Length: 146
Figure 1 (cartoon, rainbow, N blue to C red):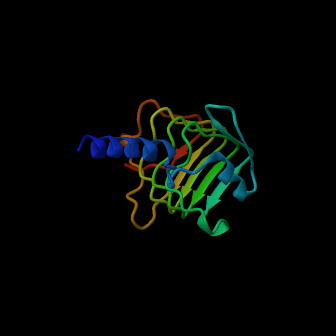
Figure 2 (cartoon, rainbow, N blue to C red):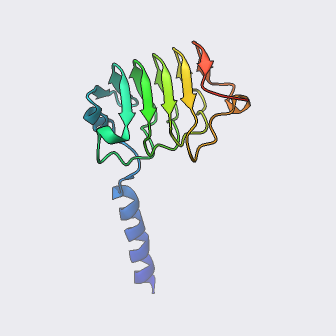
C-alpha cells in the first residue's frame, strides 16, 4: 500500500513538473503574427504593433497571453479565443478589443495610448466602474460603458 501511495505522489510531481499549459501562449508563438519578440527572463516583449486575429493563425487556440507582456506599439485583438488580458500587460500604443470574450481589465494594466472596445456576442463588454484603480489609460478611454 505504501508503494502505491509513493508511486501516486511521484507520478503527480512528474506530471506537475512536465505538464505544459496548452492554453498559455508562449512568447515565441506570437511570431506567427509577423512580429519580432524577445524574452528577457521576466517579460515577453513584442517590437511594434501586434494584431491577434483568429483567421491569421489557424492554430492559435490559446486563451491566455503570457504574463508580463510588453507591446511596443498597438495591441489589437479581434475574434480570438482569448478570455482575459495578462497580468502586468503594458501597451505602449493603443489597445483595441474587437469582438472578443474579454470583459474585464487586469490589475496594473498600462495603456500609453487610447483604449477601444466593441461588444460582441457572448461578451458583456467592459463596465467603466469595474476597471481597477491600478489601471492606467493615458489616452482616451472609449472602451468601456456605464
